[in-house]
Length: 532
Ligand code: TNX
Image (cartoon, rainbow, N blue to C red; front, side, top):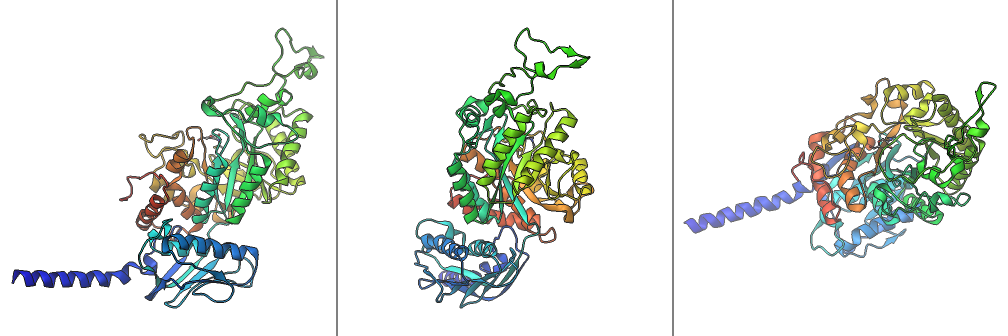
């Protein structure tokens, strides 16, 4: 009796279990981050099989690249060949005609999966969504025997903001080409499309400038803490630009100025304000005015700096040599940069006189315009007269964002209290600073760029960017610990509408994302806000 009861129980349990399979593969229960605009499920599943193949409809190098990315992503764990052709296939990637936008749709039936978009970027995003609709085991680089199924249904998706960025501060601690590429890979999976490289600061100059070689020879030698620094040759920078472009990510180079310039000031004495008089030499008064010729004589190079204070350095804004220098640097970097933006920094110039600061920013903006780019600058630049198309990157002050808006300029949202990946999670975090806030995962997630800054509305906002400053961060493990999972939260803030976002549902999806990171050996922070 007892035995037959157990047998019956086992049969019921087995049946229940097998009934569960379809429900766990319902498309709207997939763990897609950022959450798409709409997902509707229908009955049945699509099953990836040994004979599965990719069909490209349309033409162009970008389209084939997307097809090959998908094939390469699916092959290792499934062990299937997944050929890519224009002939036929059950995985269809279709470039449709029409004005190119980032919008895409995916239609999944038991016979076929079809991704369509008017742009290759849209197809790339659709491909990322498809990968996240498959079981997390798809991330494995070696064979996993299982059913590779996706629930039938339709996904329609498009981003809320056109600029979805991440910044790496490669100046405070140098970040190797390989580690930047690894970050770019992760950005791609999160549908981020701008990589801002903070290439210079007090502690380091990180890009080769052929006309001013001491920038990297002297200014690139060290980093915070006094360890060996580094820099990208122009070839390596180009390699990063191309690697990013293959993933539909545009590089935004930043040369921070007129403050945060100690590394350049250490390399070239002539860029320093002429206050470093040799011992015993004094400025004289001529007709009651300081004689600047004497003041400017023999400026001394600054000392190499490896601490983490901010706001103590400035270029000499009143010397022509400074603008010759800035123009050479901008020209050389612009030649290597296909994207539309050049970031001129402009933050925390605390030892630059206010009028000098405004003069400098306005002149540098003109140089950027001359070389065909638009300027981006930290929000302080809005105290100057901004050119048409210049973008103010909000990090601290509502007043500055308002000044930019009143001048008809757009705002890039990087509020330090929400979007700064170098802020500690809580007081026990082993890395990071906390001058702006402690930022737990829910803090990074629960804010709305369109209402965050007083007087700034959705239409004033170009997008959202998550900066990672590296005073306390050195190497891939540190980067991963600070960036993940928060970068995923911020990617959803940038891509998905406020109405679509939901913290409870995000918790469910980030747990699955965490499994993917585990398989990819990404050492993310296991926030106590989530039951991993
Ligand atoms: C402020 S944010 C800075 C950076 C520091 C950062 C550290 C901004 C525009 N300037 O120079 O690295 O704080 O959190």
